Length: 124
Image (cartoon, rainbow, N blue to C red):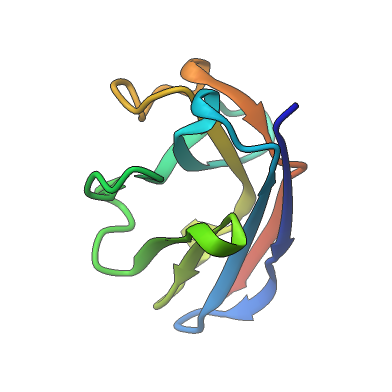
């Protein structure tokens, strides 16, 4: 059973940085692609960034390109999301997720496993 445990997040001023971490246990071929999503109350989950354990390039939403960086540490089974130059619009609950593969990485429905979520609040 694949389990995702998130850490990080919190409150930061606009222009600041935060780092989110996602520890993956029970990793198998069913969790080859890792994505980060965010969701505001009453809205659908929005793709933020994604990366494959097998080495494909990382993918980013246009809204975070140049500010966010997704990375992986295979030895630690951890995926990181470094968020720089944060804006008030980045305020959301953030989720890491695992999918079998990344063909439709931007669609939340392809992800089988989800972390518990962590709140990111950016004050302006």
